[in-house]
Length: 394
Ligand code: PLP
Image (tube, rainbow, N blue to C red; front, side):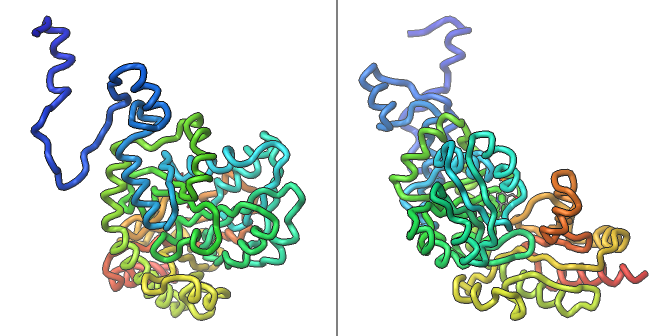
């Protein structure tokens, strides 16, 4: 049958038949909806039997989710539109009014903002504790504590959490443990294998790896994901199919990137520690890092100790600005985990959100610089850092 021009053009080319077979990489499914056969088919689809609406399910998101579940050794993964979407979805779907959560005080700044500004609006009580001190975490537990929330390598001072000590307390009190493992990646450490109930990531970082994708993921047992999924649907934070496809492609090189970046970080941490302009270097690979032994026993050190490091210069705004300006290769960027080395100034990143006293308490002094190490030749990176440090004396 042939239709009039305005009708026909809407259908031309939309149903390629029989000519696509075994593409070497998966196809992208941008469709917001899938054609239904009849009412029975709708009921079947609505029960999860097949795809019918993008927000409820999409092949690209599911393929990516399967790869993340494999890497994290979890049963099921939800793919979200950002790391913050992953974090807020977990907190808002598992906590309710009257519950209490104990969070590490050394976590990503905007996660702290969720805890301070969003959760109390829903009647959820929050306490912060030093998660490097299991006794302090134990003391923070109340009769209504339902969740522990921590990172493994915390930002920016690279403090390491002994997760098994924390999950032991959690088990005693039937508390869920949620871990943001963005800095560690599943190659270095897999929290679900050490007693955590939920592991999440900002996929904007090492999963994406090229500073061109924003995404997040939540991995847990099937039972827990089935509790989170209905609220994930309502919060509407699913990742789009193209970004899901791109992230799945990036995962193929993640092991190589992470290994190269982490090994570079070890070399750079050592070089910075030897530079007279640098007062202190924070990286778990360094023998004088307070948790070097712990990190060495926890991590797959064949991959390394993460690619995030920070160091302290003199607390002199002018000098720090000069150092930053004189870096030739390494750029100032408000993200991390990309293939190219970048730096940020943590105090400036949060100067609009926290008071000077709070920033000092968090260790974010003027002289603190954070580096996200990339996969360049480490000799070029060290040379760039050394010449910029030397320029502070001019
Ligand atoms: N978790 C950590 C440890 C982060 O560093 C970030 C962002 O920098 C996030 C979560 C938030 O991720 P996104 O920016 O993808 O929302």
